[in-house]
Amino acid sequence: MSLKGFYIQKDSWLHRLDPRTKMAYLVVSAAVVFIFFNPLAVLAVLFINLILIFLAKTYVVLKGALAKILLIALVLNIVVHGFASPAGKTPVSLFNYTLWIPFFESLKWEGMYVGLVFGLRIVALGLSLLFFVSTTHPTDFLNSLRRLGLPVKYTLMLSISLQLIPEMLDESRIILNAQRARGVRLKNSVDKLKAIISTFIPLTISSLEKMNIISMSILARGYGAPVKPTEIRRLGLKHVDIIVIFLTFFMLALALYIRIFYGDLSLF
Amino acid sequence: MMIEVENLYFTYPGNVQALKGVNLSIEEGEFVAIVGPNGSGKTTLALHFNGLLKPTRGCVYVKGKDTRETCVEELSTVVGYVFQNPNHQLFNLTVRDEIAFALKRRLTKSELEERVEDALSLFGLKAFEDLNPFTLSLPLKKLVAMATVYAMKPEVFVLDEPTTGQDFFGAKLVENAVLKVRDTGKTIIVITHDMKFVARHAKRVIVMVDGEIAFNGEPRELFDQSTQDARKTLERAKIKPPKTALLSYMLRQDGGFKDLPANLLIPEEFVEALAKLRSKSVVKCL
Image: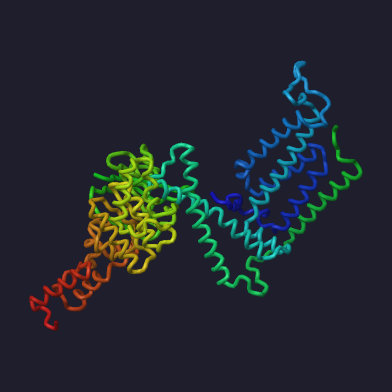
């Protein structure tokens, strides 16, 4: 298990896009999703995302836990809003019966509609993010953040912590094994809870040691020198980037035009 | 038979084949060294002995019990494992608590006291019993980690690179501790890169290369530079024989000492052999 796990190395033109282009798409898709109150508009973004993921050949991410969480969020939204949304007026009747739970009112069509829109928004945004992380290498992402003006101090901090997480997971597995080898029992959940102490202390100490060493080694390698660092992985906007950015902003302009002249397209 | 490995295959997630058909048996009371280049499967093999890894294919039997059907907690009383980095095993506030930790639920108070005292005195840690293990030096931490495992009274002692990364005295301290454990009659399995240690103490050496056993026999046989087979094995495993073995071979080969045995392993042996030659007055220059 590693955090890089989200990134799927494939050879596609979407992988080769500049991270900044993909970030622009991320922002625009989020805007479009939020300016309309119609499930069809949200679904359109959702389908564009699905097509992008398939074009990038990274559909494996759709099988992951995050995709499942998105689906659960959709269902939960519909149910919770269906019962609890103040927008609800018309009760849903099934063979003349209405669904009803104590302390809440009955299930309402309008509430479910609100929940559907909210839920689909979450799914569409989640898919945008999955598309982004599955096609962008973390290093490229951080480089592009630096290009956008985030100081090296923060991007380096981010990149080191991104690397530390999988390392700490590995380390904790070794420590847990070391504890089991000296007879720490892990049979039931109470044992596991107690074992937290025996894992946590060595893990904290080894992480602190590691951080100390990393901080010394980056200082020794010239971090903090008062000069502008040279870029090694050069990022540059190519023709395809410019076309994609143009299309993205065209999508935003079209959405804004519809929003201004035709409203938020709400059905209720 | 203490440990029996039959046609053991192990594959790590990501389809990394670490062991490819290992067959091996270790008798009670043996002193076995496992050597080989990094990533050759030494630690993977050793982690099978106490059930921390379960075979992908094949079987490992510890005292006749199949490790796939026995839990680590039960196996840890038969096979003790000292990890390479002692910091991974220590977490209590005093050395005494550290040694007593895993025993608390298994023994009565008096038995526990006795075991802890026994471990403290065997490893010479009596003077440090109230200190925090994290304040100790690396070799002492190693000793504490060994003592915690020893206190469980396992019959087999697996040590992962006990002498690595220490100064001469630290390595000597740990080496002596290993010998003390050996003298209590336990089976010792040491994973190491220290060929001097192997030459001096191991009764049998297992050479791992690419997840397979490349050699399984006496150190004297492995380090014998006069045989083609041994030289080939050493080259494959990227192992350099101890200096004494090299010297005795070179003296015999190029230095005109035709009667000097080619497979001397430790300086004492070497001196003895030279003295013998002198008494036969073959070596006139001495």
